[in-house]
Image 1 (cartoon, rainbow, N blue to C red):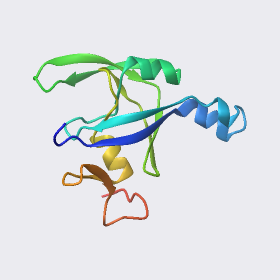
Image 2 (spheres, helix red, strand yellow):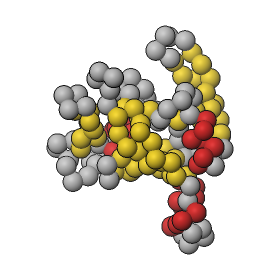
Image 3 (spheres, rainbow, N blue to C red):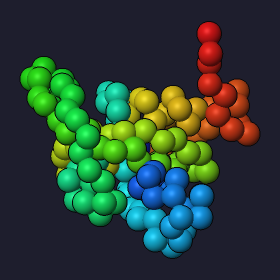
Image 4 (cartoon, rainbow, N blue to C red):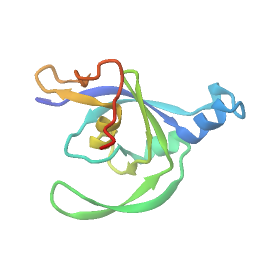
Length: 138
């Protein structure tokens, strides 16, 4: 599709990653999903469909109100934390469950310090911080 930006995203069960780092779970048992994710600069959050939540073995831990592009307000399930890996940069956050594909929203882009290159239809590291994310504290 014209103007679409897609990126390979590895999504992992963050709780299992935590246990694996502490030696309580073999690293090979950490559930993950490789997505051809759509970068959606109009979305605030990470969005994952039900089948991804199930594949990662996540529970829904709450609900949030979300506004659709139509202006309608819907109530969506909130997942346990997901570890998202994009081009060597990682963020851990909860996600909203809806739709039929993985969407990368602004919270992911900001936390990984990635920017959309519309001309080449790809994500790139922030040119001011090519070696890794630098988060603003002010």
